[in-house]
Length: 224
Image (spheres, helix red, strand yellow):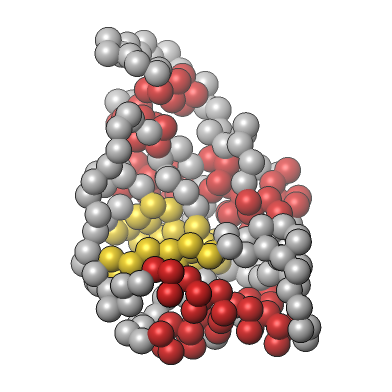
């Protein structure tokens, strides 16, 4: 039986319905919609499909754990409990970044250090090694510490590709549509509309970190 992963796709507030339709069309299971993000489940093939085909998602994340932590010890223990050795090879490079929004653990550098230490300890024990060269493929690790119910509303200009793709979808752009942008600047909206009209997967010309993940078979990318 193939492993089922929980994926999270952040999106612009107000575009959740569009992203939900895209995710559902990929055959994802257990889709859960919240403000500014959608969680869903599937196998390794869905990781590839989501990266290549989702137009309105800011990124695609693999959620490894979610737990309550009010102290650095609890943060460490929860992170250490994740079976990192099943996901990361012994030579994996794993930079850690994160954010803290209204959390008791407000020091991001301190939290990054704790998370990194927990992963190192777990990998050393799991791979039975005393050194981790971090000379192999990159597995970016992200953590988010936040008080439940808090969300950030600020966005940046100019328009991002994901928001332009959502506008094109809500505008019901089809192959025979005529799209005009009288205030066209960099052309983002027109480009996204053209890609949607031609049914071109938005990730075809991009490269993704997940292409090198040991737990995502190479053939699933070729099959998309």
